[in-house]
Image (cartoon, rainbow, N blue to C red; front, side, top):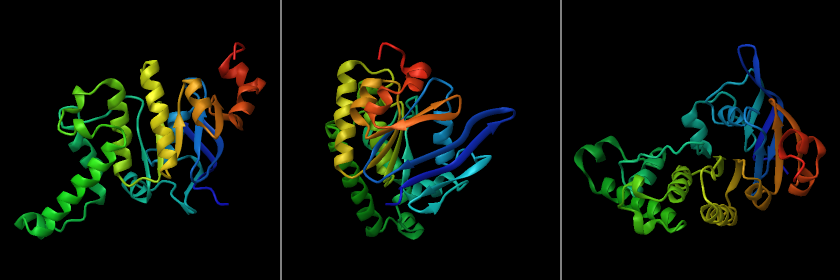
Length: 254
């Protein structure tokens, strides 16, 4: 079975600093895979390489069998990869619905003449976009907040809205960068349920997260980075009992 996402020998350097070293990762369709490690381990840099923000110094990135190393961000998004960030990046003054619609901009194919003359085809497309956005919001019980400003939502709801906006791009693979950061226990539990529901809908997910309870509950497999290098990979049970991981990251109390 071919991996949906494959990193082969990826190395990323910033001057004399090696942020990621000879990284090999496989993510298969329908999986939830965790990428964990201490701060500065190279996790977000890895996401930036996958999504085209950085061109790796060495190595290659493949998606659905096609090399995407160094492709423009917009092209990688169109192919079906979308991400969220550690810090919330919503358009806070816009409505919840508008935020999701913005995520769909790459899929809107209304012609210039339709837009200029306000022809029926443009109106039909706009209605389709609204309906699609509302169906995505319904997945997270946010449909009733469609007309509310994004910054009026509770923190956990804003986090989920970011994921919905990423889904709106037509993504098959979601890269979630610390989706539970700043959440309380109830919000984290709601997020866990939501992410599991995405797997049930056919999404593939690669996530960075420091909440080990969430990681161990969600992930089919886990990769562990430390100082840019991969030090372990395996199932949650294998990672939980790996002495190298315990020493580098989890701690002896685990």
